[in-house]
Amino acid sequence: MRGIKTLNRLELSPLQRFQGCLLAGAVGDALGAAVEFMSWAEIQRVFGPEGLSDYAPAYGRIGAITDDTQMTLFTAEGLLRAYVRGSSRGICNPQGVMANAYLRWLRTQSETGERERANIGADGWLLGLPELHSRRAPGNTCLQALHEYQSERSIRAINNSKGCGGVMRVAPVGMFHWSLHGVKRLDETFQQAADFAEITHGHPSGYLPAGVLAVVVQLLLDGQSLVAAITAAKVELQKHSFYEETLWAIEFAEQLARNEVTPHEAISQLGEGWVAEEALAIALYCALTATSLQQGLLMAVNHSGDSDSTGAITGNLMGAQLGIDSIPQPWLDSLELAPEIAEVADDLLRFPRWKVGEYDVPDEASDNAVRKYPGC
Image (cartoon, rainbow, N blue to C red):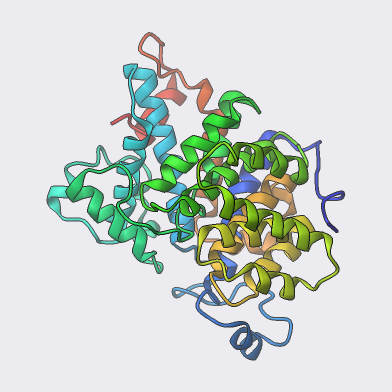
């Protein structure tokens, strides 16, 4: 595993790690956006033998995010709105609040009617960002499952999908739980991330990888090594039924990271990333073997398959390890919604200080938080 000894930096501040996690995830997403539906041969034909090396135009601009980052932001929103609701009212169903957050994302995709809009709570901050009201190749499973939730009000998806749409959006769960608990209650982190993924993806291999990613992110934010974080996440994974497929994919990624195979060969053996356990495995492999964030992200997107999702997850992992300063500045400068993504990361770090309890005396910061993340 070439990169693991050099890529853990204990001296980073929590804010550097939090902003790194979300922003590097968005950068990986934006890099992969231009090649998501291309084969490796097509990528080489367009960009040269080494493949993509920088942002390329997608969705009418350079540095465009996709549905992966959109849904990641709405995951953060759902977590923070659930916190405000639980603190101010004393009762909250986080999975229900999260489902409504995803329905607000669905609204940005022009997928809801007036009846559905009345049932998803106050608008909040994200819905007011015009850049998010853009369709960026959303996953059909997510769209269909959320429509079914609107009509059936079944909190868990009534499908058997293990697509990667559940795992690619849950890094904020690990961030949220680190802010609340440090590295304690990993079982709660795992379960909540899996529950949120299960809103749209009903196969165990569709929601269990989400639990793994959230736990790994939580531990990386604390300065633990990626190897140690994966080991702890595997312990949590094996507490759940039907864990075998996800565990096999993770351990195959670890095995390939120890072997002398080329990254392209390793990733082709791990799959294309369209399903959750493959996307997670590819991201873990890239994070385990890369010697820089730039190398890891380019490795994660230059393959046949779901390049934006594997890039996004790799970015979440490596950004949590290396912090915001590891992201090449030109990539940050061109990244769509970079200031807003950094602000969400800051909110995920600082929310436990908000004075939003029933008996708290609110201050200006807390009033602003409630306006951004109303508990309804």
